[in-house]
Image 1: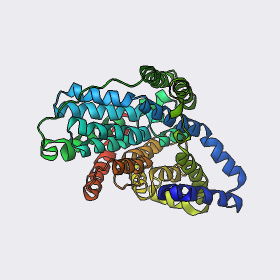
Image 2: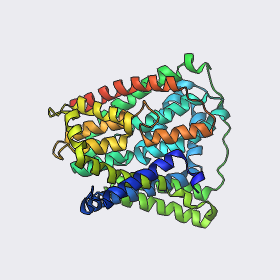
Image 3: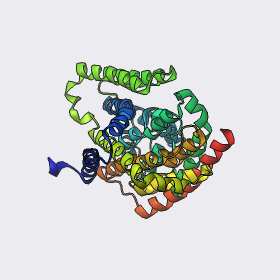
Length: 390
């Protein structure tokens, strides 16, 4: 079994073991550990349910059908395809979580590339950049949002009302960078692409059930249902459909145990470190002036250094709940900023693995340089929108 585990899996397990050791040795009191894990319980239910829903939706060929019809709708025009792809990736991220875009939409887009004779790299970069930068609008878009929403006591509608302008700004900047560095003719070389031939879905019942599950999830969010309840109800519909029509595809691999282990370990390790000097360091880094640009910059910088989830958790600890703008600025930094290093977000790590499996070469120097530009301009523009329209 150990031989089948990758390096990232061992890191996740090591993080959990370290957290358990902290509790066992008293560095993190049992009451504090229990409170931390109780705090994230509903979020873990959401995380598991939304990944299962997204995995089965992909198995039902919903994403494949949308991507193929999107390419047909573009009629060989790269400009039209660009806007369709960015809209598709943004909507999947906003409503189904950034990990869904990175893990499930990436292989769909990469599979579309040879069928339509499209360069794979522009499609790949579209999914990963928008997986991060389009994850600001709704609490479900990013786990950091769910954590922030709990602390600042906003429901989904209030959260969206505060973040609509920053979300538009971050997507607009991302689209500009995508077009200049990956989509314009000088980069892609081809004048037009070949629209693919549409293929019928294998099982229309599963296709309909998965589509209904996704729509139900969105509808429940609009009616202010708890995200864990909405995701669990939507996933249940699709699971039942697969029990009837495709039981063999319901395997334990659908459960994102890696994410569960990583998040559990994280919420034991970070509170321990915060009790033993980390909070003082974070307070010094963000300062006492409540400068939104400085807070966002710290969040972005730490995300690219250690990953956005521990970065958010570490800084959030020292920001009082009544400083909503301060916390929202931190979310901008930890959502829009993690586009430079391969480990800046879990979504980016999963995306790199998907590109490797599909034999898509990602030029690392180009990835780092363009990502740095996007992080700087994107964070500045998004914080400006938060301040101006907040």
